[in-house]
Image (cartoon, rainbow over all chains, first blue to last red; front, side, top):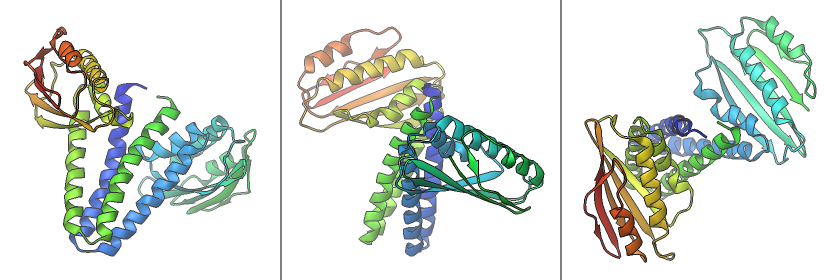
Length: 174
Length: 174
């Protein structure tokens, strides 16, 4: 790993964590201790998701999710990891390729003035992985997203997506 | 950068930050708000040091200091960055080589049962950098450290070190 890459990566991570610390500091200064506790619970929960993700044998997929929001994209990503499976039958390369193409397509299909959220549920069933995908935002090109989702990719199976101008909803497995 | 390296690096960083959050959570649960505020101040100060370090044109030196404590070494490292210089006349490669040799020598020269601290003051004077080095711990091989410090390295100038079984103190510049 190049040293400048290490420094840059840790800069992004530090920036995220300092935002959380500042949030705690802010509510603390107003005496809102209950809110502080909620924020801490949320931070711990998020970190547990990140840890679970990092322990899967899916380095490309994990690295993509862990760093995606550091490139200012129109669509903000969040996720949670459910289940206790090990995802050993998942092809990291194929899966990550599909996801990064989907993200690219989605970012190119949303309005530039609104806020957009993509929420992923990573469900670990035994040796498999299911991905529940939910988008909330404003789409300007529903057609191109639908085309992309209807395209087959070897080894990836999609449920029929629900899609409107404000919402996309589907599930994916291997 | 390899994806597994990214995942590992962020795992270390997450671990450090979660320790800080747990510390805040602990004092919060005991109602020790003043202590919580002190901890937050200390976290912010530490992060400012890391940011300053990361912004220097010294990626090798920065990466070494930012990641050193993640390899469980007998000697624990801390540092602060003083001054507003840009360190543009510092040779990153030569400087980092010297420092990592010194750390290696020091880790091999301390007792295995005690705690040891190395504190670096990185002083940014205009285009130069001075390093004030202070060790507190228990040395079992003072001779080999002294030999190392007396050896010349091109481009690096050391003040005569104060050295005892419990302490090392010297300054270094370029």
